Length: 92
Image (cartoon, rainbow, N blue to C red; front, top):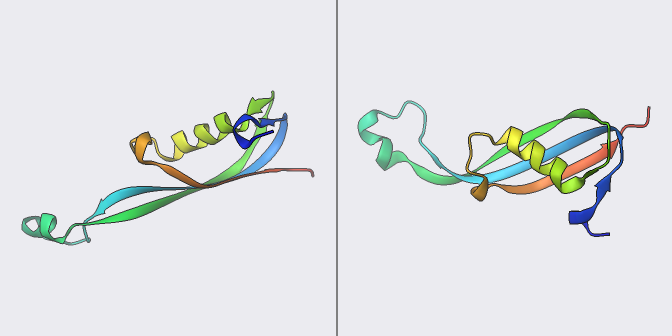
């Protein structure tokens, strides 16, 4: 079964998510007159993790997209790259 069609069974899970996206960085305390000159392109990363209960089977891709949407609600989805998404079933 491919990762894109993997179904996650009901249960309690831990998740870890890392995303990256291009961004323009302007150093703090830069005077307004110099903001454009001091700005530079960079890659930003965001991390999200936690635990959740899943009550019915769902595609892994849908879970991943749900957490990406939460972590990047203020970022254009077209520029977001998922670099890590791990699900671990909690067994205790």
